[in-house]
Amino acid sequence: MRILISLVFIGLTAFAQAEAVRIENVRIWAAPDSTRVVFDISETVEYQLSMLDNPFRVVIDIDNAESNVELTQPGINDKFLQRVRGARRNENDLRVVLDLKKFSRTNSFHLQPNKHYGHRLVVDLFSKQPDEQAPRTVDPENELQENKLRDVIIAIDAGHGGEDPGAKGPRGTYEKDVVLALAKQLAEMINAEHGMKAVLTRKGDYFLRLRKRIGAARKYKADLFVSIHADAFRDPTVHGSSVYVLSKRGASSEHARWLAEQENASDLIGGVSLDDKEDVLVSVLLDLSQTASLEASIDVADRVLGGLKQVGTVHKKHVEAAAFAVLKSPDIPSILIETAYISNPKEEKKLRSEQHRHKVAGAIRNGLKSYFNDYAPEGTLLASRKHIITRGDTLSMIAQQYRVSIKKLRSANRLTNNRIKVGQVLTIPAS
Image (tube, rainbow, N blue to C red; front, side):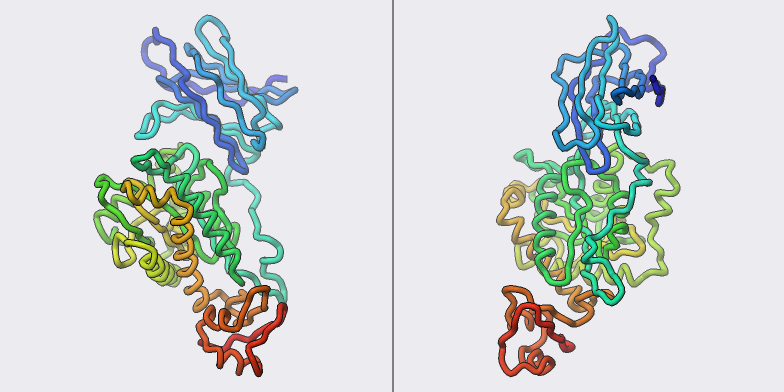
């Protein structure tokens, strides 16, 4: 049976094109809940897209087109796409077939050239509409249950990804790659901390629009949203780390304003237009009545910046503010960290170093830990002022973690010496 999904005409000129449109490259980005197939094309095209079953496959008939490139094939872990194949349909047209592993919904559109790519034809495959995806939940052991304390949840957002590479360094290093590596290192460090749990908004190289990044944090019931970046600037000598919070009254500097504009363009680069989506804007508008969220963001940002100062040079000695779209969540404290300027050759080299990224991740972890030790949400292990002894713990380490003296710690728990054992529960006195 033939199921006609859509018939789309794009880029028709008033006269027939004499020269065939060239398919210059094919890229495939596999995400956990979707797969994006991108055709780099020489010009806009007229095409028809259909879904066939037995077996399921998407057929794309591109008028007046040709291709001399080898078609890219999906990875074995792709949840939707089995194979890509193509052939001449007649003397003038090209047929591309996407063999599917299962029935998938489709969305297709054309993208105009930008600073990274030329003309593109994009086909998205997914099971449900993007906003219908089932909520992703935290591990059961970390959920807030009756008479059970939970971990503090920190959503770590690696900027850019997939079709949106972010900034590019002099040696060809992509921002999307180094920030994902750093985000994974940071998550590992946080997960090693008692009472803290990290979740990643993206775990691989795929495009994730700004709204879904915020939505992922909310679905995970995150207590904090941390967006990781490594941007570029026109001047290659600009260097240093920066930490940003949301501003509704304008940027704290011209540089901060310019940076926010670059980051906010990510959706347009990846293929999402916000021009006519009123509900998107409404969903991310900051509620001015919830000033506590912004105050918490500033406090966290200040502590993280303090940690980064111990690792290397900072671009500004104070927390900056700008209208970053990814920070516009009214109910979750949010910060954005520019770990370095990838446009600076020296900083690009550091970002490529796993050892340096580890130092940066440690500095960020320390800032987050400092904040939550003082202001952990109610119902969490950190707020309970109870500490369960795990292997490797010492009384001096615990005292340092909670910023109390060993003497106070021993007194609160009626300890006659510094000996503790795994599984023992300590009461933490006020610092």
